[in-house]
Length: 168
Image (cartoon, rainbow, N blue to C red; front, side, top):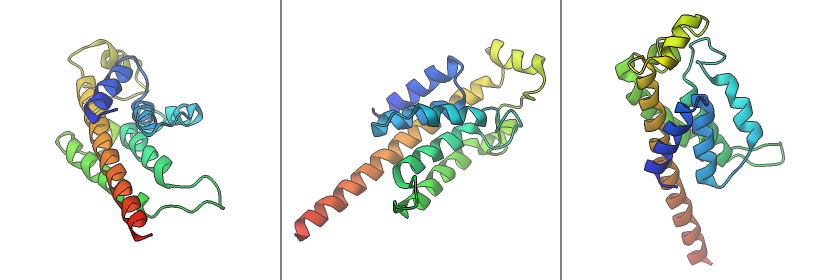
């Protein structure tokens, strides 16, 4: 899946009311050829800035989870790839640049919704002029940037593997 396709699919899923955190993980997993519904389900709790508290945007959490899926480990016997740290920093840097115009990386700064106020939530989803349009942009652009980063990481890994094979 190309980065622009990831963007479009992420927006489509978000418009169908999947949480931003889940959307980023879904398109990232698809790009990596993974399918782990338990991860998608678990990331639902990060919507609305972690359980509707307005804290860190779920799109960032979802994107970082994809990097973790690529480079981290699931048990003590596995070795974690130190590349995870730099790749996650790149995701974070892009997200900070993308959301600077909104005042920060928190859901409350981007969406400006009190998720505990039913009227605000209703307006967010029902009014096309609401701050939801900013969330749509953030979700789409984060998915695109994640796709580009995953492409770069794949190229880097392929080059490293080719180098390794030439040395043999």
